[in-house]
Amino acid sequence: MAEAAKVYPVTLSVDYPDRELNRLTTFFRGILIIPAGVILALVTAPVWSWGPGADANGAPQLWRLFFATGTFLFLPTLLMILFRRKYPRWWFDWNVNVTKFSARVGAYAALLTDEYPSTEREQCVHIGIPFPDAKKDLLPGMPLVKWFLAIPHWFLLFFLGIAAGFCVLISWFAILFTGRFPRGLFDFVVGVGRWGLRADAYAFLLVTDVYPPFSLE
Image (tube, rainbow, N blue to C red; front, side, top):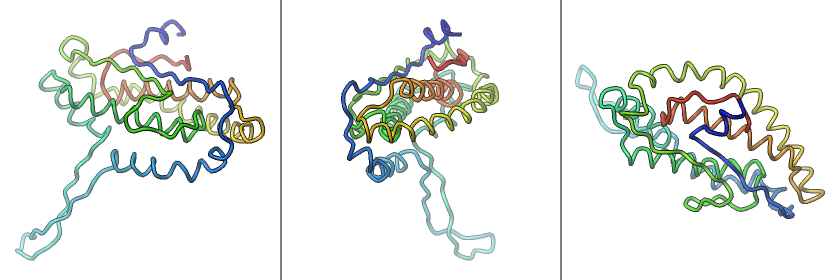
């Protein structure tokens, strides 16, 4: 399983801060993360548009139009792979860039770095997601079942996520007293994020048909 993790096409690594972290920004991290969290929510959350319309009797009413952005480009990508055997490059770039920004916000929220998340620069979070050749690398029917095949990952990640949350809480106290994020806890939290990214890339980003390994490495 470790060997499979090493060759998996989707990668995530976070540079360990081999220095003292900022205690003040760590203490107020829950407040400082709000602006970045709002930006991320605006990019990835559904947007509702309202406009005038009429019902069957001609009476005026409001109608709603749902438009999804961010990583919710899953459905159009699924249809393109299914019927056209294509993965539009700009859809891929959009999904990858949103994923990278999400990872930077997540790393800051999890105290893995005290550098405020950038909307453009890579910073200390490094993600590798190769652009797939839809005709050679992706089977057209797989997007319909990947979410189901990934259920074992979601089940395990639920409990791993709880454990990672406790690690972040413990590390919050450790940083306040020592200025350091304990290396073992750091590697575990990053490993959970790595596992989650592989599962997302397989089931929702649809960039690979290679089944993700059950590994933190």
